[in-house]
Image (cartoon, rainbow, N blue to C red; front, side, top):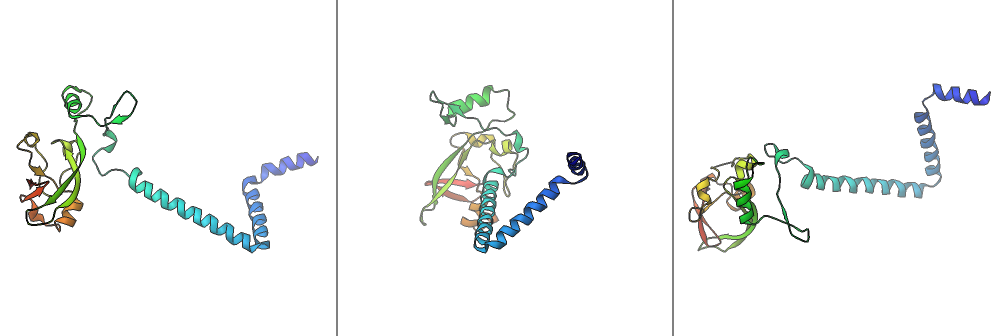
Length: 196
């Protein structure tokens, strides 16, 4: 009879909520008996939550946030592997072959990190990190420059490639957000280039 009563009571109650409230009351009684332990427990939980929130915020900012690009889910980064399984960026010959023969991609563009030096004959040279990109890089990403124009295909040939696009950060910090920089010539690694 007792077993039937307990089973019947279990059907008519919210077991999860009642068990949770019983556990909370018990936990509060234990913490009230030892306030030092309670303070240490609360502080540990607060630090853990704060550290997790901070780390997630950094990872979200650096890795998880959606890129401000047109259809970023359609972008693919192509790597090559060597005999040991190490990943490498394609060399120019591989890039040109992929661009010429691939029927899988709408656009194939190349990008590589470069460290140049910016300055003029009269000023001190400063290190300037940037990207060396193919002419269709902006079209591939679906972005347009904030000011000025994008690269054109003719500027990818030697002798006609003396043009640069400044990043927004570089434009703001090194050129004081001057919109008249477009069309001016600057020196990058002792080479005169035009800001487009």
